[in-house]
Image (cartoon, rainbow, N blue to C red; front, top):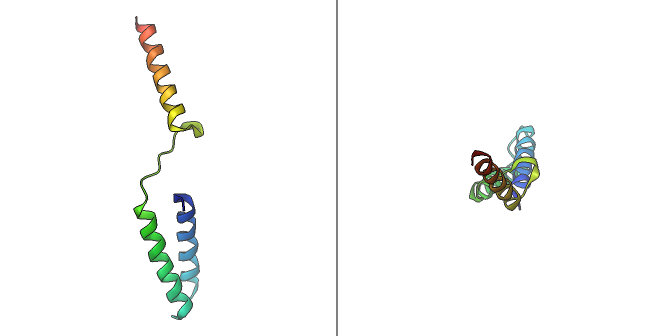
Length: 75
C-alpha cells in the first residue's frame, strides 16, 4: 500500500478505536491494526512531492533548463 492509503487507514482506525469506550475483542483488534499500520507506514521511505504534480524526471528537466537559461543570460 502507498503512504496516503496507510495514513488514511491509521486515522480511521484511531477514530474507530477512540469511539469504543469499553475494552472488547473489537477494540483489541483495532489496537493491533493501529500498531501494524503504524509500523508499515514508518517502514516506507519518505514521499517526495514535486511542484505542480511533476514526476522526478520532469522536475529535473525543469531545473536543468532553468540552470541553462541562467548560464546563457549571465554569459
